[in-house]
Length: 198
Image (cartoon, rainbow, N blue to C red):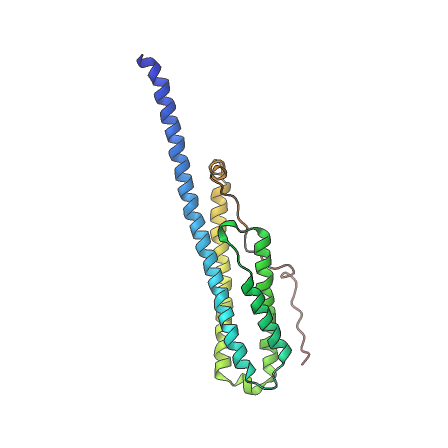
């Protein structure tokens, strides 16, 4: 009778060991996923800060009576479009991330045009509010870049863990899969054309 129990005990111990190992993997994946989601929230917070600053910048610039209206409208429109795009970090796809990146890139582009055109307006260049906002926007753009790098580092850790064998078996069982990186917009590798058509 005792000999018959030995294989059953071994089988129970092996199954319990596999179960405990899979629970450990799931807990690690949850922790990595939470880090990645927190990093994505930090990216969004940096973009939100930029959107808030743009509103203040536009109000300041509107004070310059002869300032180019089309440039201001383009900035406001790009900002409005950017605030419409949201992503659930737990289910993000490469397509969603690419769309988010495109609208944010459009904000950066129109904002750059606004700052270049502002050079033609001495009263605006001497406005302390405008100068302060310009400095804050530069700082915010640097923060955005830092947060995107940190997000990609979190994705690298997450993907590395989820895709590694034997973790990939258990990750698949629990519904975890590879997530996309935050990539540059298409054409970002080409030199920027600078035009001075004032």
